[in-house]
Length: 138
Length: 397
Image (cartoon, rainbow over all chains, first blue to last red; front, side, top):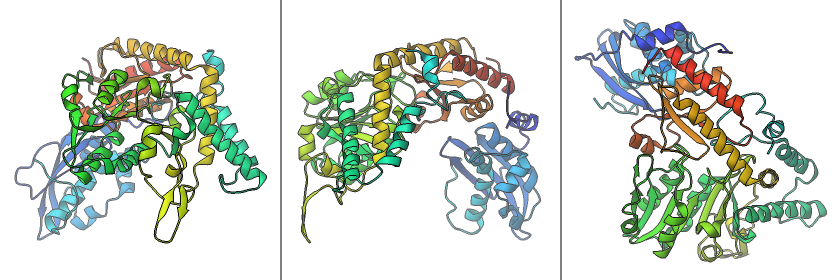
């Protein structure tokens, strides 16, 4: 029997098995991939950003990884769709754990933070022409 | 060896199902007490003070060196204190650099922990030497071309037991061939020293490295053995106090080994703990530990093999303390988190062996590893935990 509060709530397990946003947006203007070197999890974020309004219109993801990173990617897509870029860039670990409804330790927080980190790096690299680290491989 | 009596010596062993000894062994009270006693009674610097406590501290420190030497069949002057295996290998990669030139071969294997691969990659980058890698096939070293690979090989550095998949390498045979070719042989014994009788002369290694924390000593202490023959001719890898013979403003000369390799104040408490840890192993009996670890690890593999969703990622009939496996449909990190919720400590991921994980076609594995304090309760807990992983993620083979 599980003795502590589980990381794997029904919602996390459901999102891991039934992702709605796991797809490729063909005409995305943000396409970015990065990995978590400690576990090999890999996430690619696709986003359509309206540059004149600075709004993230549409977002999806693809990749492989643990249930926490996959659920985090799903919930991130729901959270940021239609949001202003300025607001997206403010999302931090506190917000991500709040969205996930989990308390995560120093190791598992990296899993949860992978999708938002990839999205932020992708936005920076695409629109601010600086190297956000990582690379797009697809 | 009375396992239930012995388990009481380890404060953490009674609180959790600890199956991560390949990363770090738990500490018995005897080790904890020895370090505490030293810090309370003799915690002053070694090799410097002329007062009584300083002399006592130096005696204690040097007695640890003698103890380690006896433990692995070496001479005290061949024992160099380091911070651990990683430092030992890096130190060798720097100290051996003057012997390596463009066109030389440095030989290692696809099975290595990154700490026995990256330092050699960097040595080759610095010198223009070529790194050659013995491949892994079906979880074991493919040594078919080993003889040809030894041509122009100046260094051959190899792990005794894989930290990731537990394969035990035929080290005596490989090192004999290497030495016959005039190649310097280096053994990463981090995973074998805790439960395998080691004799550096019988193994035929010129150098050997291991970490104290894997044999119940504190962190930050490790051993680099270098045979007397090579120790005399290689240069120190860092410089400062304690390691000099004479110092002038523009030049210096070094004292004799092992002190010429131990610049600065050493980890004295670590050495005290290491002596106590080796004494604990000696008292328990290394053969008894090896038998117990082999038996309990075999039991884990047998039980896990009965679960259809589990794949043991190891050679056939493995004998080491390491059980490396995957569960169909469950990411290794998720499995480790679920097992943690069952109070079971395992490691999950690539185990700092990324090329090896690529070779076996996985992003990572779940690794359980045993030591003298594990028992059937730990086996049963692990099997139950794995079954719950499968239940939770709802996968069927």
